[in-house]
Image (tube, rainbow, N blue to C red):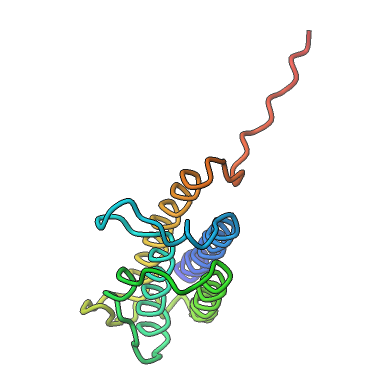
Length: 169
């Protein structure tokens, strides 16, 4: 039973990362360079900064923390960069990073979910690290989606309401 629950958690985690990455890629495809890097004030993050931030977070917690790859994250830089990458480059970077993380998560056994990992000066179980990353990824994907709607003045069409049954008269 525990193994089945663990595998369900791992599978669902990779599905959510895949889904949210698709949403980010779709948003980036709707934005021009200026929109990706625009902000209305220093207190705001650009879409580009959010993508870089997600990439850094996934690399640090999953690829480094669980996968054992050296930690190369420069968190402050994720928010201070004011351009340089195009939509296609950002989409490629986030896709490559998420694919690497999904391979690590997909390769875990349910038993490894209790292993202790260290990332961002915290020591937690692998399960907690994955949960943190997926939740964080969804949070910022929602911000990217909201910003894209504001910047384009258009909906995204990700979620369609269920069809209403025909009214039999």
